[in-house]
Amino acid sequence: MKIGLIGLGIMGKPMAKNMLKGGYTDLLVSDLNKAAVDEVVAAGAKAASNREIGETCDVVLTMLPNSPHVKSVMLGETGVASYMKPGAVFIDMSSINPVASKEIAAELAKKNIEMLDAPVSGGEPKAIDGTLSFMVGGKQEVFDQFKPLLETMGASIVRCGEVGAGNTTKLANQIVVACNIQAVAEAFTLAQKAGVDPQLVFEAIKGGLAGSTVMNAKGPMMIEGNTKPGFKIDLHIKDLNNALDCAHAVGAPVPMTAAVQEILQWLHNEGCGQCDHSAIAKYYEKLTGIEIGR
Ligand code: NAD
Image 1 (cartoon, helix red, strand yellow):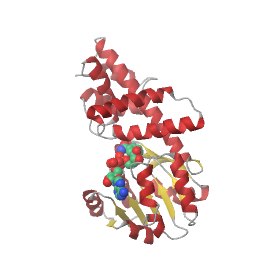
Image 2 (cartoon, helix red, strand yellow):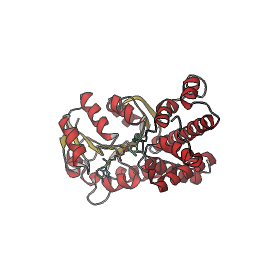
Image 3 (cartoon, helix red, strand yellow):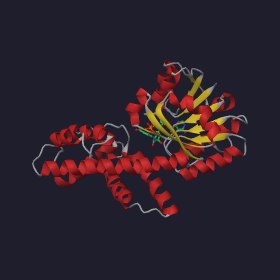
């Protein structure tokens, strides 16, 4: 099977390497960033133009920032889809608006190209060790056909419904993650202001009901003052904008999402947009004048 992957950022690069390690060695890659392409080529992939990917691949995957990037790469007169053969498949692993996923799938259906929306959770560490969680939308038979490919990158691959269901699930995931990070930052701030070391709070509560994957991954970063991304604040703003749009459209109340989005937006305006989303702790540090755990 010939595979094309477009988008070799923090996530796409290790995911490409895991497909190669998993035996999918006929892999063409493309990105605007040549250094990223060179790194994946050194691991065994072949650099290609988007046109070559469209013309020759049985399945095209994307790992791009947001809906406009996926639409501009795939659709339009010189988009990848314009070169794809009928019967080829498109799998978008980016986190985008589910409405856009459905629009793209409808365009591709006109050319007899099936689509899965297959966003992931787990961040860079799980992208590197191949244990991401995939949440997938699309036809059951297409899902069954490509599950082994996704298994080279993920430990959990769950079909959530038809196209768009993957990204709807991802929005739910991003609400839980953002609110959880805010709760951890707020709790650590309270502890430190009250004279208890946040490191000891973390040790004491991580194994109880308050413990979480988010707390284990992001708590130590807050305590060290480490804001290296991981997952950038600007990308989380993008996800929560999509979540708020979706919630408004379907009539779901999301007051917690709106509150944490305001904090992320304030941090973006303070120049923290490229920081890891655990830098929500910086909001509390700036308000209180403390440095959590330091
Ligand atoms: P990133 O910004 O590191 O990478 C995006 C890549 O896309 C970059 O290398 C960029 O050069 C490339 N790109 C942009 N436009 C392009 C185009 N027109 N043609 C070719 N390449 C193009 O982002 P990331 O962190 O890898 O995230 C990618 C997607 O995965 C996003 O939707 C994000 O929300 C999602 N995601 C990220 C994480 C994480 O922890 N980083 C976790 C889960 C999901």
